[in-house]
Structure formats: C-alpha cells, structure tokens
Length: 118
Length: 115
Image 1 (cartoon, each protein chain N blue to C red):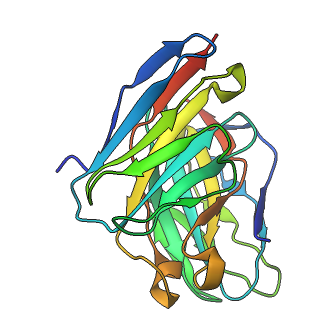
Image 2 (image 1 turned 180 degrees about the vertical axis):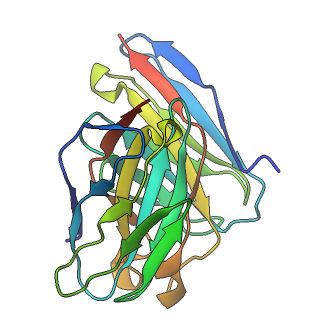
C-alpha cells in the first residue's frame, strides 16, 4: 500500500520556469491538499480539493494553480516560478469531506518535494 | 481565525529524559487536536489525536490531553529515545462552514535526543 506518492522528490528551477508537482493516493480518499513547509512557519495550506471535481484556495494560493484530475490525483502547478516559492511541498489526503465528521479527519502525507528556485 | 502556538525550539535532551512540548490554540467551536511527527527526510505522520475536551491521545509512549479550559494540548513522554529525534507539529481541525476540515499547524518543534 503506497499511500500518498509525490513526484518529483527534488527539483531546481530558474526564475520564470514552470513545472507541475504530481500527487497520487491509493486510499480511495475524497479530499486532497497541497501544503508548503517553510522554516519556522509550520505547514501552510495552498489549495485543497474537498472532492473530485472541486478545488478551493487555502491560506497561500498566489502563484499556484491546481487540478484534481480524478479521485486519485491532485497536481500543483507553478506557472512562473519565483525565488519566494523555494520550499518543501507536501501533498496530503483524507477520507472525510465536510460536516461534523470532517473535524476528526486524519490527513495522510506524502514524502514531499523539495523545490529550489534560483 | 484558528491558530496554534508551539513552544520555541529546538529542544535537546539526553536519552531517557522527560519530554514536554507545549501547544496552545485559538479556535472557534470544538476543534479536534493532533500531534504529527516528521522524521528526517520524510513526510508528516499522525502521532496521536484527541477529538473532545478531556480526551487523552496516546501512541508510542507519547501522550497529550485536550484541555479546553486552558486551550492546550501539550505533548509528553516519560523517557525519550534517540529514535524520537524528529520535528513535532501540533495541529487543529475545525469542521463545518468555511473551515471545512482544514488543518492549522503550529510552527513545529525540533527535538534532538543524544545517547
């Protein structure tokens, strides 16, 4: 059982280049998330998808776009990378969608993508 | 809005020492509370959780009690091991309305345990 798989693990970009981070989960989860992790700031939510076919902005969405390709896959795209987007990116998924049960949601994380923008 | 504050790190301990990592929160309603752990080079994994006041979450010798009166969820372990060296994140999750089920994280506390 692979859980949440992210690709690539490492990437170096030049300012202005574009790239897509891929995420796939095999747990039949409804909801998926993209976070960025920066030193001293914990994890901040970029975008999330409560269910297949829906996406919503999180805390720090500027400079990013997402696509929920199907129930398994949720990609994050940087159209024009900037040095401020140097970070470690984590994808996560959870079964619950919304309502009271959503408050007990357990999120499962991938191993992360370490991105450097020069 | 929701927020989580963790004690400043890093924390350095000797093996078998007692560990406390403080966590306090601000949230509307009745959030669920979590501790996640991140080992070097890996993603986050759930360590323990509590979903209502006075609940105690426990796992791998770690414990945390949901204290609504002090809005706290401090992580404790009686005797740490070198293998406990990791980054620990406190988080909360509020359901309903626009909060949906999103996690709000603290800034993380780096723990290093020496033999």
